[in-house]
Image (cartoon, rainbow, N blue to C red; front, top):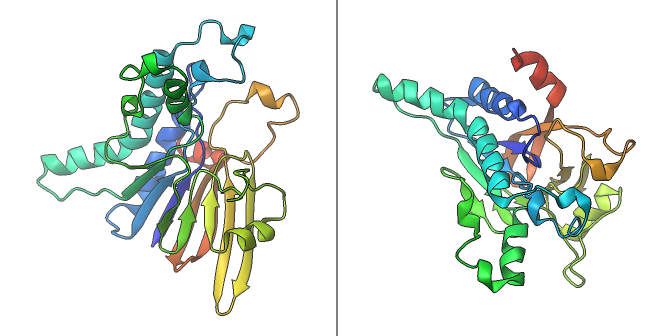
Length: 257
């Protein structure tokens, strides 16, 4: 199998989003008509700054609206899907078979802001819900659910089962050992990959949390210089694969008008 991994996209009003279309075009150009392709979005697409508990009461919260946050995320998700939609509209017009990869979306902690807001205020039940997010065509997985695909465990992030604290640190091999299998997660704005061998099989750890063009204010002037792009895992079988990075800069050079 081939896994195309899309890290956190963090779409909100006012940020550039054309790179999402670039990713969709890349998927179509490289993999159309193949039946061995999965696309996995690691979550935090709908950034939902209007529901941020960290900014509550601050001046930065002024003017933020849930409706606008949802609309911005929906528009960005549409851009990601548009190249596949366009391909299939052409095929339908010609009576040809449509092509869709197996698509998975893992809800992240930013989408979970919607759930937390409802839990904190029962009056919002029926007004706010995850059903507001336009994820048509994708299999949506609950926040922190572990999804196994071809021997690789996927979740927005993994945490210590006794404390609930996300695994951290820069020694990726230790995280592989703690999780006990090949895993891929988003959440952290970095790119880390590690490899360890257990008997005759390789176990991979992959952390990739950035596929967006804008800088995040909370990271300050020195915290935004991190890798951004998508990942393609080739020959995925029982947790083993060959990793290929596709940087945001590469997608820009190839697809920007």
